[in-house]
Amino acid sequence: MDLIGDITAIRIPLPQPGDVTPEELYPDVREQAERARTADASALEAQCDGLGEDALLLALGNARARREAADREIRHLLAYGREFHGDRPYKLDALAQATGMTPSGIRTAYSSSELDTVAREIGRRPDGRRTRPAAAPDRS
Image 1 (cartoon, rainbow, N blue to C red):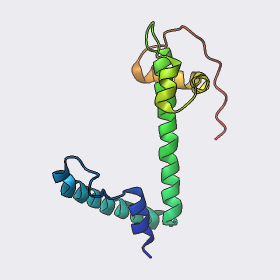
Image 2: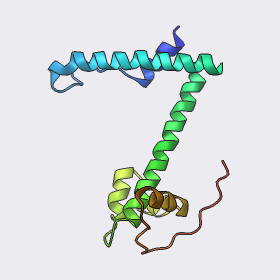
Image 3: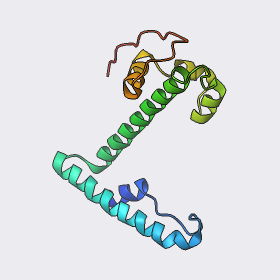
């Protein structure tokens, strides 16, 4: 059993014939994925050695961190689309469809802390149509 190799194979699947269009690019795409697997395996092994941690637990922790970063990015993009987009904010239905959320979920997906972050990143204040409740203290 090659734990790191198995984890890398799960994280970076190799393309199968028919997955790549145009088909003549398949060998190049497969080679690229194989190189990515090799680099990922080396990085994971170095992490394991450096931290003295189990490879699977590290991979799961890394996946969780990526998921949390993606969730944070979605909240920031929703705040931007609803609060920083001029006189015509994005409609709740369109945002819900794009995110897989419900329209009511969009309304509560972000708080004033996300608005503050977006304002700082883009260098301007929200359009001011609505006021958001104060952010709950982060307990993590």
